[in-house]
Length: 519
View (cartoon, one colour):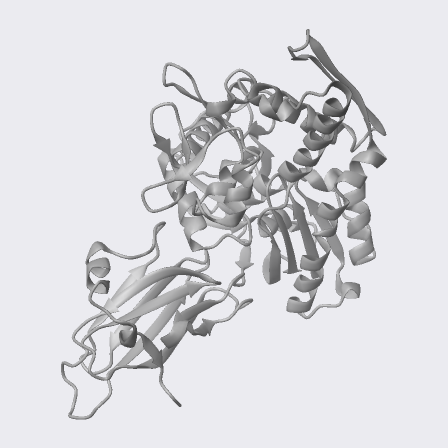
């Protein structure tokens, strides 16, 4: 059995799989013309699930059950404002799952994005096995730097459903830095500008030989090529409506044809100054109408100026958090398909005062970096030392919805912090300890028997410890200081709460919340 660990970039629009073979990382494919794999899942009438290019090809004929942008749904609730906004653009239906998660409606039932993306992982594994002529069971996966705990766990579950053991989750900017920096960068400070299909990340890293240390990371979880495509779609639809009086938004099949044409136009205009958009028989009344228009690069760039401008503030914030001046940046490494756009390159130059580096393929960089890290973990390459920071703070809830930060943003990982808390209601027999990641509550623990072992008049005390590993996964422990009894949870994809805890919460009042013990 091979111990090889492959690298996977599961992107919002496209995915890639790579491995270190004969000492060098390379993209694995069965056809050199298709080094990237469309992250598209489709359902056919007979119930068969298809993925990749064959699924993308049925966008026109079966738009209701062809799913794009599934990565944006991972670990999110259906009522999340960003998911609601995305649902208005998607041709498929997004509906609440059992716990309010963002699921999609198939022809027979609701499906989770974890389940559907599991089929993408399965196909990527099959491609790797055929390309390498050996079994593959382990992988390193690139994830957006801003992914929270639930999103990370959802990604792990999707990989497992595809038959893969995710031995490491590697932030995408760090993966790109590994691909760029191994045997290249020596004692440099890098800015990794990652604008992909669905997300934007900016990370400042210190590279010293084989050691990579993240100084800061921030970004925009809903900014990427999908949004640029949508602007072009709106332009096409409005032009056609003005000319023919027909709104193509009302036709899901036409909408998907236009979306594919918009994506093609966007890619073409990164190299050309104009692009003809021609779709035969796009409308059927009155008569058969073709869509025939020309989009100029300058006009397209005007459509997306505000989207490009949204990258500027996170870049400045990342520099501030890293306590680095723009003049200290040695290289700006461009990652993600959207970084090929000339206007994006101009924005990078405006922000950092230098051109972005494109020495590595921006679409392949993440998968190559993950493969390199996988080979290091498997002992095939010299160890690559990676030091990540927290992208969001970890806090504990106190009375009246106050949060006590225990592990702040930008703390190097792994990290551990603990604090002693007192209980508002000294007579309470139980208390709930709620843990937050950023503004999202991710875990609730209930500690019982608080009065046991207390001396008369003594106050119940709870010691809370948070441990965050190198992948940003959280283990929280709450201990009764009197009895030393404790409860410990490791976060999973749902609320992090067991059925017994949910039952215990029904009997708690607001006075049973915990508060920070005064110094």
